[in-house]
Amino acid sequence: MTKKIIIIGSGFSSISASTYLVDKGYDVTILEKNKSFGGRARKFKEQGFTFDMGPSWYWMPDVFEKYFNDFNKSVDDYYTLKKLDPAYRVYFAKNDFIEIGDNLEKISQTFEEHEKGSSKKLMKFMAEAKQNYSIAMEKVVYKPGESVLELITLGTIKRLRYFATNIKSEVAKYFKNNKLRQILEFPALFLGAKPENTPAFYNIMNHADFGLGTWFPEKGGMHRVVESMIELALEKGVKFKSEHQVDEILVTDNKVTGVIANGNTFLCDIVISGADYNHTEKLIPNHLKNYSDSYWDKKTFAPSS
Image (tube, rainbow, N blue to C red; front, top):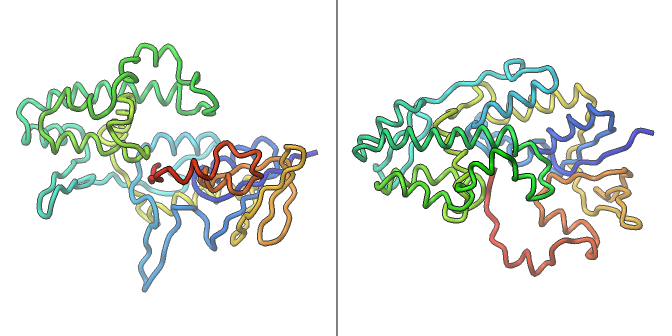
C-alpha cells in the first residue's frame, strides 16, 4: 500500500521535499494555512503592483539548477534569470554607501578604492571561500542533518581551522577598513546568526555572493520560482490544499497517524513540517517535545535562509 505523507506549509523546502517524495512513490499532500502558496516567499498585490513578500534576490543558482535537473528539467524551462549589476548597495548612513558590482574584478577594484592592497587580499580570501563552498556543496549540504558527524569528511578535516575560528575574526585577518569588514560579514545574517558566532567555514556565503553573483527572475520575481516548483510538483502528482491550517499532529502509541486541519482529520503515515521548529512542537503532545515552552521563551528568533 502506498504510504501517505502530509507536509505542513508550502515554502521552498516543503515543495522541494514533496517533489522528491512523490517521485519515490509516496502519496503526498501539502497543507498551507494561507490562501496562496510559497510560505515566506508569497507575493502581495496592491493597486496594480506586485511585491515579493520574502526573498528579494536570488543567490546560489547552482542549487536551483540541481533541483530541476534531478527531475530532468532546467531552470530555463520555467524562468529567465538576470544577473544584477550592480548587485546591490550597502548603506552605512544616508548617502554613504558602497556599490557591489556583478563580478569579482569589479568588486576588488571597489575594495582597493577603500583600502590600499585590499584587492589582492580579497582575491586570496575569495579563493579560500570558493574552496570551502565546493567542499560544502559536494560533501555536506545535501546530508540529512541528523548528526554533527555528517560534517566530518576528508575535505572538512583538511579545512579544520575554519571551524576553529569565526567569520568576524577571519575577515579581520585580511582587512582593516571597517566598511569592507562589514560587507564581508553581513552574509552570515542569511544563516540567522552573528558573524562572531558563526564558524569561518561559512565564508561559503561570500562565494555565493561575490563569486556566483546576485540574480533575479525577470518575469514574476522571486515568486516565479515558487510557481515553477509548484508546476513541477503538480506534474509529478503532489496535491496542494490552501487555507488548511494544521492545529494538531495526531499521535498514537508514539506514532504519527495524521493531522487535524480546519477541524477535519487527515490520516497519513508520515508528517513532514516545513513550519518553524518551535511552532511544530506546539502541534505535538508535550511528552514528545524536544524542548520545553520555557526553553523557547528564552530564545530570540531571527530570520534566515
